[in-house]
Image 1 (cartoon, rainbow, N blue to C red):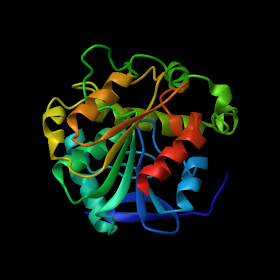
Image 2 (cartoon, one colour):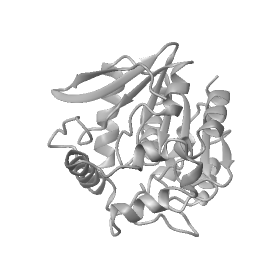
Image 3 (tube, rainbow, N blue to C red):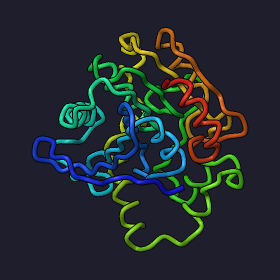
Image 4 (cartoon, rainbow, N blue to C red):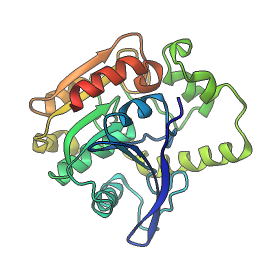
Length: 261
């Protein structure tokens, strides 16, 4: 489902950040995961019918530049608060996906007026105590892709997104995104040892959404986020992997709109 959206570059301290936006209503910021911004998908279009949706591409991803000093998730957190300020998006609702969920949680901890409501979807950022987060940097992109979905046949956009051989430009972009993810998430791998102890500072309404069959970030991590953020809740989507917004978009849209309202 293609909707109407615009693209622009936002200058943040001399660094040009690519931003997609569209829809109407109060602002909603979407923070993409380690694989990059997948574009204006079906779930985004549905959200844009209630909210004005903004999707910045993080520094070093897609068409966004990266300042030389930006090396860690802490750097990304500092930079991203500047993106919110520059675009007048402080106090918005926000949804963070996977690595973007980690980023959203760090922003909420460090800048308590950044968001008014927060949704974390299959987020990394906390080290599981029993299971482990799959190491996506030691396996091939094709193997990572296989881990993302529980059942690709139930994802309505699967063929449109993944049914064709990627172009050389898409392969190059995917490699650049992967390099940026390694830079941000390698040591320690996919978590911040301080974060669990700091999440008590998050006082805004917060919901975790998790695919029960996530093979990349175990459901345990969603339970740990829920335990650490007072008053938060956890919605589990059955028969679903790491990307419920793509694999089970109708269920995802329903729980998102219910929470964000």
